[in-house]
Image 1 (cartoon, rainbow, N blue to C red):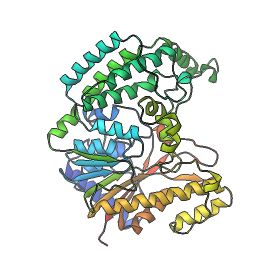
Image 2 (image 1 turned 120 degrees about the vertical axis):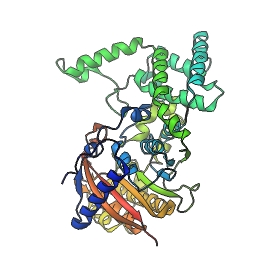
Image 3 (image 1 turned 30 degrees about the vertical axis):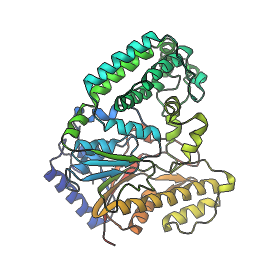
Length: 455
């Protein structure tokens, strides 16, 4: 059945009643329950959504999901909420706006920069004064003083005047002395990089804009030609200034939340190892781990990563190798041992290995690394605390790969007890990524609620 529609920003008693109803129905039937989080928590107030829009990021979690669970008594103001796969910080922003303390992790340095910036208040007067000084510096420096950073294929992605003006702007940001302001300006710079590039804005990964890709009558032909004309004369500084002023307004709710006591603890680099968190320190985990081969986060971030100097172009592959769910492996690294995998995963992967050893290895590595991440989540979650896991199914050699069932087995093996399994339809095209003939596309996702039991 589909859950009833509720008003936006559920009061705790209403949210608790709805959660109890869903848990009771799941306990009776044992089958996933279809819901729509867009009606379960309809139209959250626009002002509270502003911080999420500071910077684009692929496959962002639907904000209604963490908002619903944070409206319940699974956690209270002052509790510690964690997201070990925080991405651009959707869960952590929602938790902070709800008066919780937050902690996260992500292997992508751009994600860590975006999230930390979203969760750090910025003085509007100080930022406006810094913007005025930056404007003067750029005006007085008609050419950049230093070499271009090691940006991947810089001549291919940027017109000459664009890359020159980006460097002038970046040099001014690097000269800023206030670290919080410098980080805020750098993140805004990053949000502009793809907008002034020759990459197609409709795609998460960089793909060159080409009008000839579409026939003469296709609606995207004229749109692409218009975009290409604008990029030849785009004013980089005007775009940056407009974005910065917008981001200042978007960040305002975070400043209010921080003044009420919520704070960011830290953003770690690896969900499999969060040493700064004590055993049982976390009250609630809400996370959406990478899907099996679904998103290429480092490739999608490559222009920003290299412009900001977060890595060299030659280091992008190293960063990619840190991602759970990655797809690039050498033939020498392929393993044929499926022991130690959860039973459901082992059956699917062993069968796939006879058809495509590489795809089987990708899947087995994903499961093993998610097992390590789940072990760490169990360690940091207090007994009686809860885990909300948002994950979708995938395809393995043309067959369905039941990632939610596999991760449920992993969670239960690590001291978790399932309380609820919801199914929500994905409308965002950013998650419906057609990967290749051996994979598929994601159009539904499971929202799993576990309770950490004593062991």
